[in-house]
Image (tube, rainbow, N blue to C red; front, side, top):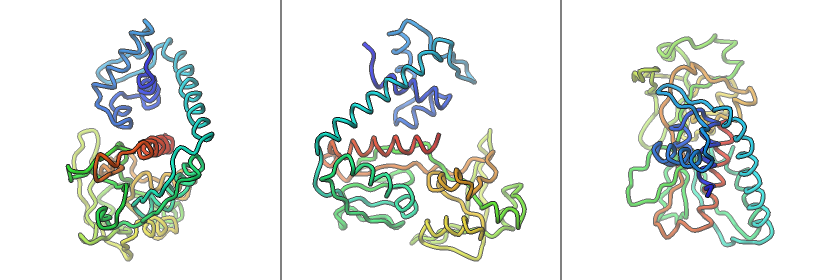
Length: 301
């Protein structure tokens, strides 16, 4: 019997060209992703992917099957959404904490869309780059970048492969010239982020393919404890910023910002949805998790 999860793994693997990348996005191990594809191939009696130690590609049968798999998943999602639209399945108030840039520029629109499916649902949002005290603020869920160190909390991946990128506006690059090397950052006006733990003025990168770590001390004439301000300064052509890829995806797509030195890997910045206790992982929270995970995956294509 075909399994929906196996279809999803196959489609995501085909989109990303990598089992490990697909596994990271879905939030499972590469071994489980590989097993899902093998199980699907076993059910069909066909080889869908050609794997070598260095590459992965679709077979002719895999290419033909991919479009049918996409359509099947699309129809299932449409049916799921239609059922939800036909009944107010969730209500009450959901208290959510989130970072400023992510909240204002992505989550507000996405949460509006999610609320259309559940008209009785109400939000109470805390939008700040300061880490929310979920107990004191009585927050139900929090969206946070980075690895979660508190093992007592429930952490669910939303965008596990997200990372940070260097960006600047076309106007800045015309005025100051292209950035040719990481070492040149020390001579540029860098737009920095600051929180209680201090000014983030040491930017870390990894040169591929060996992932050689490089840390650059940067300086500039502006810093803020609000990541959205840093992004706006970059769009205005005032300097170079080191931002979450999710936060600047819209600006990059619209041409307001350009990614600099794309051959260099930035620091990992996985986005996670956090709950204080397992009991808070309700059907509503799980559905919101899946919704946000899909939105992030679409944005990162």
